[in-house]
Length: 346
Image (cartoon, one colour):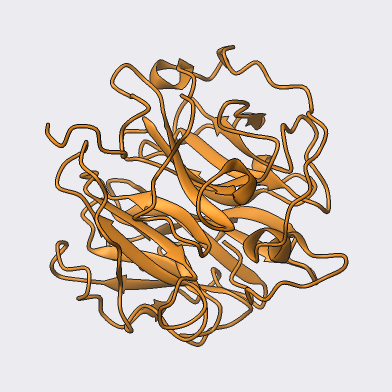
């Protein structure tokens, strides 16, 4: 997410404003499509399955506004996302429930004024127990720069309106640049928080960083650049999401200021794997079709089991708004209808 004003602007636009603020993306000539059926040397198990044809999440969670970065809870019964539909301010964090994994998503509710402000708040990420929330804000909670990452707690993981006052992560995480898109991976000692840091006039110069944190989300060490994924590339990498086992990372890259070589469309999702949590990440590969399209596909997250990919896609792909939320599945138990109710049951 880019926490910027949603006001459309004309002329030469920064990638952040063009994609996040709903400027109509121009279709690009189709680039060579990667062979998504080919197995990577690092890929094992679920990684060798290809992604299904994406499914629109429907008209209840999607709206005529900009709906971004859907995040599924570990039990699969909640969907968190941020949207600039009417709320407290620009972008707010919202949550939808469902009764079971094959049931329809219910009408979303706003997470409330403790988390959401009159500014832009978004990019939710959670610890596995659902008691710790990381998110990004562009100044509604104060902070060090153009966008900061905060942490909030709740005692009851079933009460989505009981979040405590957020605390700025501070330290090495938040700087005068723009920090956003946290992604948490649990470990025995606590966890690793991955995030994006963007700088420059248009925030198109971005890198991926990581930092060790406690189970409560407090910093345990210095911020470290994920160098193998942060090599110079046009407009990216943005919005890293890491699978729960720490061995797969997906980000998006591209845009009107520069399309990454090997892309399918204006902005695409890319994937990197590693053989263990201590191994370096592999060279990123384009996820390919059918997930990526000739338009802008971005801001993805993975379900806890790694078999469902949620992401944001531009209006040209279909839907209700300037950006809508979609999903794709993989693996023996994955099926394209998950998340869009056909039979509400086990």
